[in-house]
Amino acid sequence: MAVVAVALHHHLLYFSKWKTITSTSLHRPVLLSSRKKALSSFISCSSSSSSTSQTPEANTQTPEYHVNLGLELFSKGRVKDALVQFEAALSLDPNPMEAQAALYNKACCHAYRGEGKKAADCLRTALKEYNLKFGTILNDPDLASFRALPDFKQLQEEARLGGEDIGYSFRRDLKLISEVQAPFRGIRRFFYIAFTAAAGISLFFTVPRLFRAIKGGDDAPDLWGTAGNAAINIGGIIVLVALFFWDNKKEEEQLAQISRDETLSRLPLRLSTNRIVELVQLRDTVRPVILAGKKETVSLALQRAERFRTELIKRGVLLVPVIWGEGREAKIEKKGFGLPSKAAASLPSIGEDFDERTQSIVAKSKLKAEIRFKAEVISPAEWERWLRDQQKAEGVTPGEDVYIILRLDGRVRRSGKGMPDWQQIVQELPPMEAILSKLER
Image 1 (cartoon, rainbow, N blue to C red):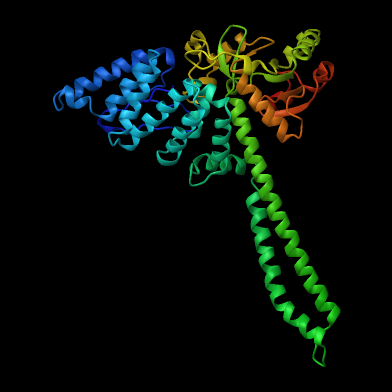
Image 2 (tube, rainbow, N blue to C red):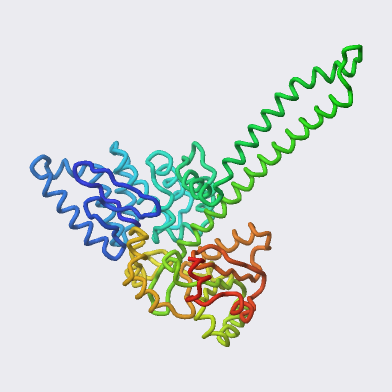
């Protein structure tokens, strides 16, 4: 559960894009392993600063107190008691910052208990009424189990479409990315509308002339010429309207793909050194090759890849095997939802700014040293759900054996049914030092 502590003097707690919830008094994101310490220091600071103006009894009746107490109880595994505290905070007329904190952490408690619908309801309210950023839900490791449920998929789809029930912030973010990827779509739409309007105006004046031509007479216009003009206008309107709706459809498909790409970028991996990273942290460093299928098929593909190990490593290939069915068999950990307690502690700064955690030369060098030939997926149910959604989008029957090759910048380079031809991949991918690889970053 991303820690949401209510700052002193009612400082606003921000949910910046693709960040977990942070406390302005702490100035850094707090992971599960360090939550207890951070909470205790925050509560003592809060108590000492307000002791002159409030009695202890009065302080216990504030939403801030109940939120912080709920977080402390959750850190001790007392999820049911933590829920009571978050509900108490919501019942005390909290300000927007306190209500957002209580709702979000209440959702994390419900996710811990496997109550997907209740978690989704809390997050839906926080998104609509309290400006929660959807990226926070994507990033938080404590919501990993929730992200593997159909309730999350429904919530994400609602957020992608936007609407009164969930707000437009996530869709607005997606549209900004879409405009960068397709900068001329707006210009095309302008011309579609302009030319449709022009054709409509022309048709408005042509129709009466056509009626006069049909009636005939000395001053009647040429029938075939007028009919031809009307046909051109009608055909132009039909074509332009069809192009407009086709462009809208393509935009929706692109928004769905961007949403899937963002989900993919946040999926966790365990490197050979046992370090846990998100896929986004490997951008510009490796070309992940996702192998999804039955255990026997994936194992055979891994064995064949060993023959080309040296050449594939030169090309930055990192194998990511996903076995169908492992996600349904995985047991939910008590803390971290799919991340063992040690792994959760080693999870590198999920809430930090991406530039700070990946652009450092020292951090990049260290990460490269930790990357080997193969990585292990964390939260396999999330990986399976993403892969099945991608298969549906590509018209592939969900559950088939597939492989997906990613570019250095994290986008999908190529995909196909079955397992890859490693010799072909060696010929296709340029070495990491090549100019083509630098252009791919």
